[in-house]
Image 1 (cartoon, rainbow, N blue to C red):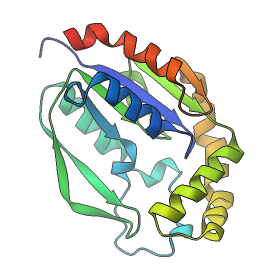
Image 2 (spheres, rainbow, N blue to C red):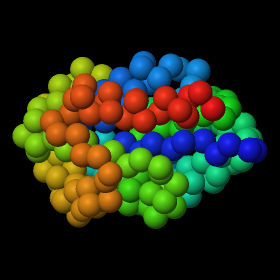
Image 3 (cartoon, rainbow, N blue to C red):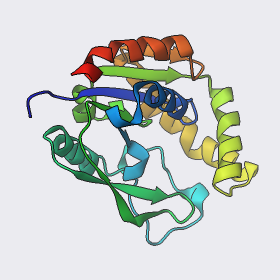
Image 4 (cartoon, one colour):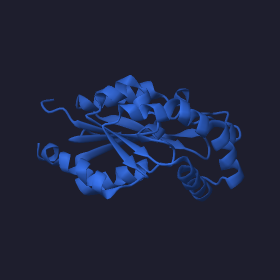
Length: 204
């Protein structure tokens, strides 16, 4: 293909506000101009699932990152890809996949995308959403109890056992790779700055 797509990365801790920033960018840029690839879609299938609080979703080995990298390269080269879907309740990949074609902008989202050198190097702009731990925990409790059928006690236990130590080991250090740091989740001024930089890309 003639024009390489413009690739944006959005990383940050669990429940930091990455999805809110991603949705705001997509809304402003337009759905037809952007492909949204979420690292969460590439969680490994767990056919023998156990208690969800015993699953470490925050370690790099929990994700099939190599597959995401392969899909990204295929997409950049103009090929249709099929993004998997993951069910947090059953811990399984769903049988259906989302057919995805190339658009001028690709948005990569996930807590660990900058942990992988291939994904990191593919990004033209790297954003890190930097939200304090207490606020992230509150948001996570709210999200997981409302959307994933978990109890507050389970969420806190999983946070203490996996989320917090993995964040400190694998996520927080990648903030050093960021071109833009957005404090406390969604920030309209920061989002507008990113969108303004994409205007010429969209025209192309």
